Image 1 (tube, rainbow, N blue to C red):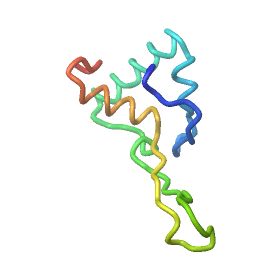
Image 2 (image 1 turned 60 degrees about the horizontal axis):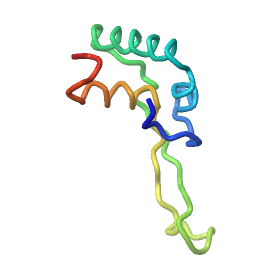
Image 3 (image 1 turned 45 degrees about the vertical axis):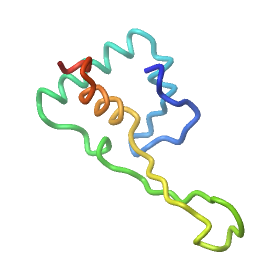
Length: 93
């Protein structure tokens, strides 16, 4: 959890990284239990799979669409679930 970046925009689920990083031991246990249930059921909430594409201004004239780049806002909980499943020491092992 300590690697989560705070102060970033939230994804479809509306859950900010700060909720997970400052939630303490109780949040970790709840998140672990939730991820275990999702892994066992082989299902995840749709909000964990969705992304919101947002244009971010790079440089230059704001009226020129070519001066924007797209970013995709993803669910923080979905990211934690995915990363933990992919790491050798992941909570699903």
